Image 1 (spheres, rainbow, N blue to C red):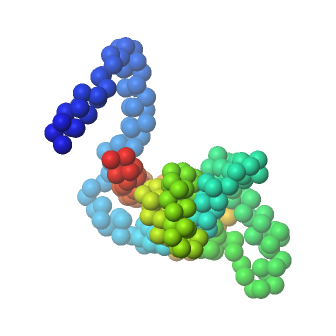
Image 2: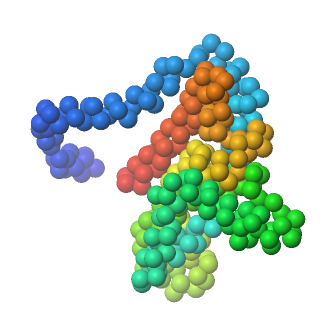
Image 3: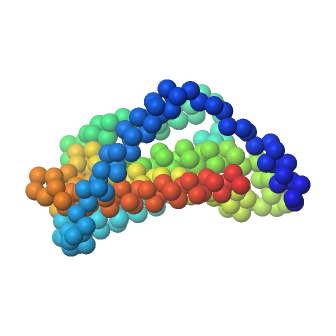
Length: 273
C-alpha cells in the first residue's frame, strides 16, 4: 500500500511555469466571473434578513419554486432515463439527429422556448383545442411552470445520464443476461447501479437549472404571485420595489445553486477515485 502511494506520488505531474501575462489575464477573468456573485453577499441586508425572506412574496415564490422544480426533476428523470439509455446504446445517423434536437433547449434563448411551449399548449396552439375540449388549461398555471422547467432542465439530465450509460461495460450486462436475468432486471441490477453517480450528477444539474428557470416561465406561465411567480421571477419583480428584498432572494438562490453544484463536484470526485 505504501509502495503504491509512493509510486503514485512520483507519477504526479509537475507544476508547469506559467507566463506572468497569462496569470494576469486569468486573474482578470476570474474576477469578472466572481465579483458579480460575491457582490450580492456584500450587499446582503443582514439586519432583518430572516424577516425579508419570510415575507409573503419571498416565501411564496420559494415554496412554489421548490415544489415545481422537484416535480420537474421527477418527470425529467422518468422520461429522460430511457431516452438517455437509448441514445447511449443506439447507433446511426438518426440517433445523431435526435441528439442535436435534444441539445436545442440548452442553446436556444429561454424566451424562445416559452414561445414554442405557448404555440403548442396555448388555447390556439396545436394541442390547444384538444386540451380545451377536455377542460384543461395549461398556460399561466403552475403546470406551465413545471413544463417550462422540464423543457429547459431535462436535457442536462439526459446528456449526463447518456455519458453515464456509455461508461457501463456492456459485457457485464451480457453476463447478467446469460445468467438468466431479463433485460429489465439486468438494467435495474447492473446498469443503473454502475451509472448511478452519473445519473445523480445529472439530476442535480437538472434541478439547479429548473430552480433558476426564468425566460420560458415568464412567457409561458406568466408572473402571478402565489400562482406562477417562482423565485427568479420574484427577484425580477422586487427590483422595482425593494432592492434589499431582491438581494436577499438572490443570495438565497445563489446559495442553493452553489450547494447543488458543489454536490455535483463531490459526486464527480467520487466517480474518479
